[in-house]
Image (cartoon, rainbow, N blue to C red; front, top):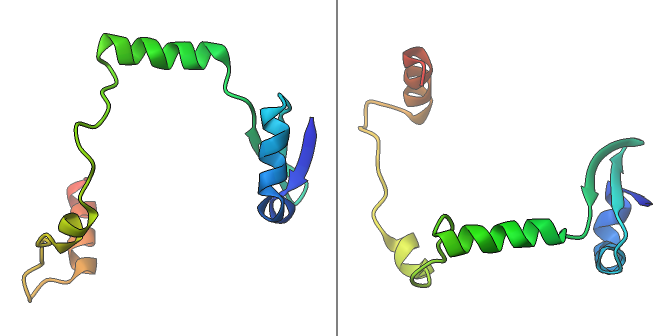
Length: 96
């Protein structure tokens, strides 16, 4: 298993991906403590995804998102007397 700290992983990400493609697992650490692993996708995972797709549990998108239209869509707004902070605090008090 190859080990890399976060700073090195950011700088050498392509190399780490090459190692994973070769079947190796890469342990990512922060201050010498493990925080993540990069590992090849197992055949059982891909088989499970294919089964979920076949059964209809996972459905691919029917169309490509029009990002420009999405960003141009009107956004919800708060009444002038309410601030975002007040809305968040009210939700917390309601237990949401």
